[in-house]
Length: 164
Image (cartoon, rainbow, N blue to C red; front, side, top):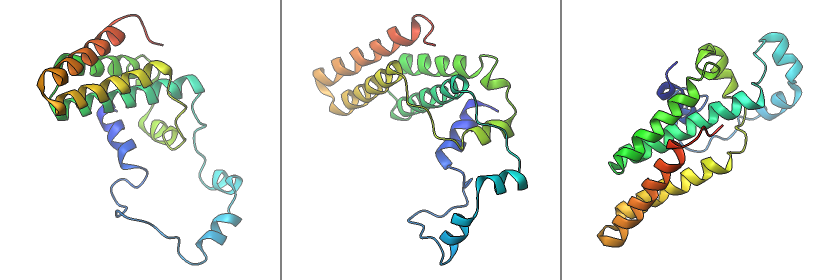
């Protein structure tokens, strides 16, 4: 499965495009049914792969988040060099021989579990991406300087040593 398809699945949620937008109030009696239903019942009916190890899950979600950051920059059509570095790093994390070699069905089941907290370096990349976007919207000399500095920080951070 390509990383972009995986990100599309994550952004769509477990409804695969079939759930209408807006609030979804449970049907009468549905909550009682859910309360009686246990995890053991679900596993007995439909055995699922175990959640991924914390290390593999962290790498998988890091690749997904980096890809999303790259898409944000590509959509805004700013910082092309930083965008390329972000996509390259996301692909390196995803195609490391662990995440990219797992069958689709298992990956999709893994993504039903909540993501682990992002590492500090990934939060820094997110802030830098936000600064690039803000600088591009601001325009002017200060906006250009902000965007350029943030894009340089992304390139320096992701272009450097292995982040895992």
